[in-house]
Image 1 (cartoon, rainbow, N blue to C red):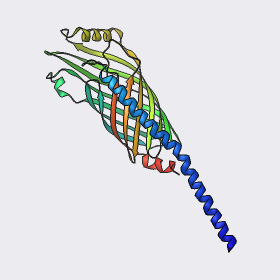
Image 2 (image 1 turned 90 degrees about the vertical axis):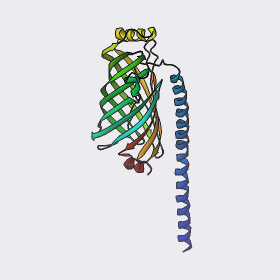
Image 3 (image 1 turned 45 degrees about the horizontal axis):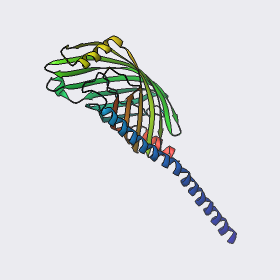
Image 4 (image 1 turned 90 degrees about the horizontal axis):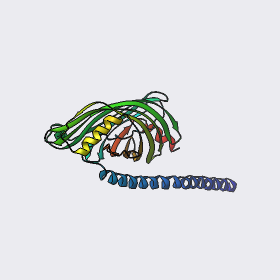
Length: 284
C-alpha cells in the first residue's frame, strides 16, 4: 500500500513537471508574437504618417491591401471587409479566398473609395474602383501556411481638378504574389511580395490643369507599363472564428514624377472558414 502511494506521488509529480515544461516552452513564442505585433503597429503608424505627407491631392495609382490567406485543406477559405486609408483618400475593401481542391485556391479582392462628390465634379480629388481575381497554390505548415497566387485586376481612376477639368483612366494590373503566414491560437502575422505589371489601356484628360499633374499624366502615357514590387504586411488578433487585423501595402521603391499613392493602411475583420478546425489541432 505504501509502495502504491509512493508510485502515485511520483507519477503526479512527473505529470506536474511535464505541464510546467509545456507551459514554460510556450512563453518565448508568446513573447515573440506580442513583440512582433507591437513592432508591426509602430511600423504601420510610421509608414502611414509618411505616406500621408508624401503624395499630392491627386494620384494615378493606389495599391489595395495584399490578401495573404491561411489555408490548410479543401474547403478552407475566408471572407473579410475593411476600411483603408491612404494619401488623401478613404476606401472600403472586401476580400475572399476559397479552396475547392486540396493545395489549390482562388481569391477575389475589391477596393472602392467613398467620395462620390468627386465623380459628380462637386469636389476636387481622386477616386478609384478596382477588382481583381487570382488563382494560386498553397501548402500548410504546423503553424501557418505558404502560398503563391497570380491573377489580373482592372478598375477605373477618376480625378477632378476643379472648374470641370478632369482625367480618367482604365488601370489594369497583372500580378504574382508569394506569401507566408504564421498563426497560433491568439495571433496571426505574415508578409507577401506582390510583383505587379501596371498598365493604362485607355484614358482621357483635360489640358487646363496644374502643370505637375499634366506632366505626371504625360509621363504615364510615355513610360507605361510599369513593373512594381509591392510589399504587404499583416498582423492581427485571432478571435475564433474571426481575425481582426491591420494590413499595410507599400509600393517600393519610390516612383518619382508619377504621383502614385504609395501606401495603403487597412483595418479589416475576416471570417475564416477553417480557423475553428485548425486552432484546436495546433494547441494539442
